[in-house]
Image (cartoon, one colour):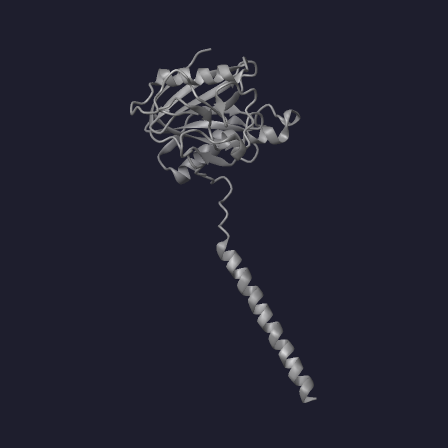
Amino acid sequence: MKQTLKWTGLVLLAAAVGLALVFAFAAGIRAQTPVAVAQGAIAQATPYPSDYGGPSSSQYGYGGQGMGPGMMAGRYLTDTWDYSNNNTPLTLDQAVEAANQYLAAYGNPDLTLTEVMEFSDNFYAEVEEKGSGIHAFELLIDRYTGAVYPEPGPNMMWNTKYGHMGGMMGRGGWRAGPTSVTPEKALDIAQEWLDQYLPGTSAEEKADVFYGYYTIHTLKDGQVAGMLSVNGSTGEVWYHTWHGDFITMKELEN
């Protein structure tokens, strides 16, 4: 009888120790799990390419329809200037020329450059489809080398035709722009986000329609300060953190 009680006690002790270890392990996992960001309050800081050469197609899954000569890992190396050993940045007009060279090499005559913005860290360009009037994709241009490459962030992860999502979904999955969030709703979402996270900043009264999302300029004291994107299906907000300070811009007529 005593022997039986002894073994029963050992079994209970082992069970208690096992449960304690399980709870301790679960607590450790919870401590290492990041807290989820609230819906509609996402300000994702996509790392700016460290070598100013642009993200690689293998890293981000950017397919790049019809990429022409000079495009290495999703970027286009212009042959007009050699700024590799020069501390003088490109002018806005040179950035426009570099972006147009990229489009020429891209090989789709339906695409046209509509806007180029100069920031302290890079130039930014928007490309539009002539036929549909929908914006196709966004580009970054290195301020010193003239290298052109697809912008990271929404342009790759939310773009359902030209970005990562387009490559996953295939041609049959492409959608003609956002379907559940209207441009007006996107502007409301953008302003609510700015009121909460960047007080004193407002959303410009225009949302550029891309495949799967919108991009909206942000204003400070009535002047362009930056931009953010709103997902056309979920309403998530992704602020573009990689541009630096706004300097000037040029809108192009086509």
